[in-house]
Amino acid sequence: MITTRRGALGLAAAAATPLSARAMTPVSQIAPPDPSETIRLWPGAAPGGERVTVTPQVTERSTDPAFHDRFARYTTDPILTVMRPERPNGASLLLIPGGGYRWAVVDKEGLDCARVFAAAGITCFVLRYRLPGDGWAAGPDVSLQDAQRALRIVRARAVADGLDPARVAVLGASAGGHLAGMLTARTDQTYAAVDAVDAVSMRPDLSILLYPVATMSDPFVHAGSRREMLGETPSAEAIVRYSLERMDWSGRPPVMLVHAMDDASVPVENSLSLLSALKAAGVKSEAHLFEEGGHGFGIRLIAGRPAAVWPELVLRWGGRHGWLQA
Image (cartoon, rainbow, N blue to C red):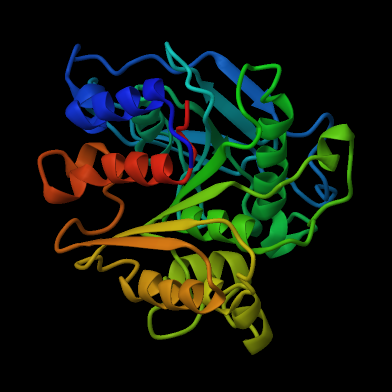
């Protein structure tokens, strides 16, 4: 990577002022407003919805006016919520929150994380995706349809948005980490092309997996994610097909893994097995394992603890791989 003087100064400034500190400094006791810009993924109805009868819901779990904690269920019209930085540096980030494939969280691993990375100049796109249990024809591939389409939209819009189409990263958390991992590893298009956007590459340039659901195999599987995606009694073939560590990673872009050793929901062995597969495939990879942090820490729940440095680690790693090159 060739780093200009301006780029070096930018990275130095970012290192001097931690991302989490800049983005998490309290300025109000009221939760910040949602970004107003959204993008529909599909020009018409999402594909394969002939048997879908669910009604979309967004539920608020927080009783504290200082922050939101929402999750979206039964999504039928998937969207990207766009968070634009004051000083964009040309990099884009597609964020895929978790939710065990039962729902997709909106804030903790979506908008909360987007605010942190937008503070570093990165244009963020938070994905609200469809779910496998809602009757879509694509079954376990329905969420991947949305992720593939979303990555293509971000890249297709990049030049018009003043962004670099060669600097589009993905960050997925928990089950969203599984989805981001599939987006990174799989090269098969999971839906029929609908317009010119689908001629654009769906390959991310970097992939960040935050406490990812990786394996669908016992004993380290997150049982809820497997059940929502593959049903109560998945076949051995389905378990292999949807386990990240069993996929063909040859030639895939660099991957960063972040996990807490005391994660009781998605055991750290998920990241360890995937790291071994990445190494065997020759994929440039980096892993950060924290002694404590549990599961689903995102940004807000890890403040003041060692794992709070994970956004800075992502920024530095992205800088080394050209994502933040000025």
